[in-house]
Length: 129
Image 1 (cartoon, rainbow, N blue to C red):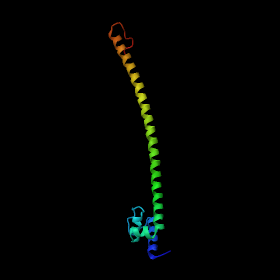
Image 2: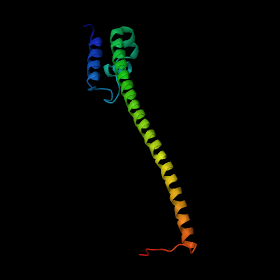
Image 3: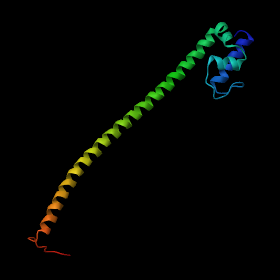
Image 4: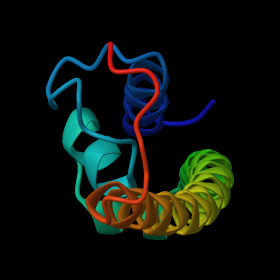
């Protein structure tokens, strides 16, 4: 290892990676800015004097972004699947409504016909329970 500054930056990186920072908020995501603040140095110090540490931070950040993206993609696929199932269910319900509308119209016509027959005095009701 090198200087005490480098040691402090590395120690700060370890703390941030394990979610145990001393200076920055624990909820803060790992970034060069967060690392610099945790180590008590400027961002440019990390960028200019310790580019390998900066590269490591960027690599970790890239993995986090990929993981978040993959998680969002999976959630999107799940929601699209649910959406597809719901659309199919709606189509089935609409088909059922069309069938029931047709049956209802047929029954209404039959009912009207029976009422007309009953009103015509030519029909005798046999069972009047």
